[in-house]
Image 1 (cartoon, rainbow, N blue to C red):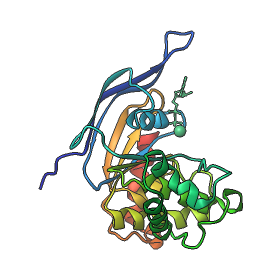
Image 2: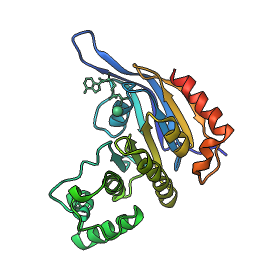
Image 3: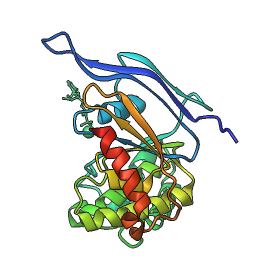
Image 4: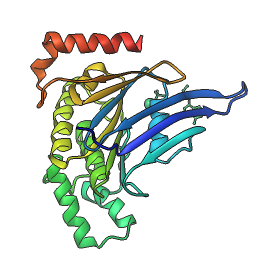
Amino acid sequence: MSVDPILTVHNLSAVFPDSNGGLRALDGVSFEVCPQEFVCVLGPSGSGKSTLLRILAGLLPPSSGKVTFHGGEHPGIGMVFQQANLMPWRTVSENLMLPLELAGAEIGASRQKAQEMMELVGLEGFGSYWPRDLSGGMAQRVAIARALIHDPDLLLLDEPFGSLDALTRERMWMELSRIWQARQKTVLMVTHSISEALFLADRVLVLSQRPGKVKMGLEVDLPRPRKDEMRYTAHFGVLARQLKEAIG
Ligand code: ADP
Ligand code: MG
């Protein structure tokens, strides 16, 4: 069965001006993402991962190449960054309502939607909390809920768990898998962690050292739901090794 992609990236390059003829961050990057697929982009620091996501989110124009979203001129995109970036003077539920407020939604409906999202990410009852009273993991859950609140077609995640401790990060992997399956979203997530990519993704794209090029696309044929024990299996080890060798 072949499925039409939701996103096509064709021959994308990004060059930042510098005093030396330009710094090339991405070079000829091409790939497709299918609806409801979970794709991880794995690469070393400086390989252009954030640049790629910023281009996809429309925050940065590409130097050359093309990004096409299929099925609609204005695809809904939700983005989550490494830091939660919550507004400190707004409560959790007010932070969640902000995107809807900006879009001019009615307050009662916004409040209802915020409530729904808090349940989805396991923060029921925390609506009146201030960001400063949240743990790192909780703040990232709010950021994910905020990115999902307008029901985007595509969720872009830029190392969203990079600042969390190892145990919280692993708990968040389970949460994100659950949310992804419950909401049937398409996810493109950037990471520099091999185990994170293997735990979450259907497919992993490996970017080379700068300038980032797609060095490898690996199908992750590990059964779902993914379990912690899986990481100690021989097959997980084989996949991890392939990724490790591709990263170089
Ligand atoms: P990654 O997210 O994989 O660590 P980035 O996309 O942040 O990589 O950066 C890729 C390269 O582009 C790096 O060398 C970085 O210094 C450079 N870069 C990123 N953003 C800018 C910018 N706005 N201006 C100049 N150089 C940039
Ligand atoms: Mg980055």
